[in-house]
Image (cartoon, rainbow, N blue to C red; front, side, top):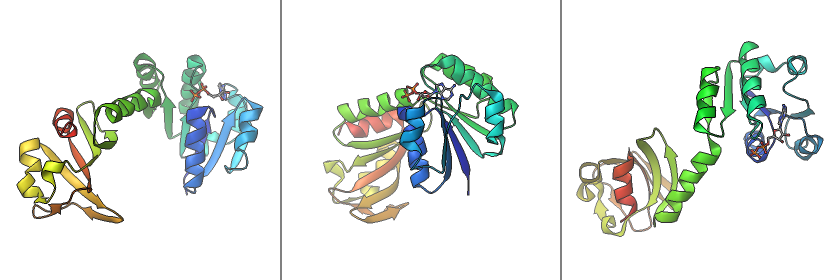
Length: 215
Ligand code: ADP
């Protein structure tokens, strides 16, 4: 079982820690703020009030033995960067750090963060898509150019096979799965018919997906 530590229990870190705990992972939650620690202590494996800038205190927690450490300190960019450096110096295998701006993200990569996440930026992208598109339910950005989206079957495709709808050729996207009520059709073939109300999970280029979104 993976052991995961979350440092900083703000809105983002708190949500990450609770979700991982619900998924059954061993979660150590760390914050300087006593209230934050108390709020979460019954929901995670272990919660401690520690200043992550205190190297000795971090070592005492055995932090280097954790499989993943998430640095979710947000507003205090200096602490966020220094804690990331410290964790990598201690030999933590995988450090995931939250960045507030693009430049902050670049710095985190330079100092050795294994994964940099931009929750505010990503949520902004998702909300923007959800606002302007009639049928997009969710979106995962694979790169700046490619995404996976979940969309309600455009009416013009309903009742047709994927081949006929020509999703791949005409629209330059690939249908990975179809969700129909409780049923999930994985990797549907060309002869698969899509129904009105089906949810399509589609991968493709941003511009091609945008074209689908607007139908
Ligand atoms: P969010 O935007 O996700 O709510 P915040 O920056 O508001 O993020 O919250 C970050 C959390 O990190 C706060 O609860 C704060 O107490 C905690 N924090 C800040 N610095 C440290 C530190 N050096 N060690 C541990 N926790 C810290």
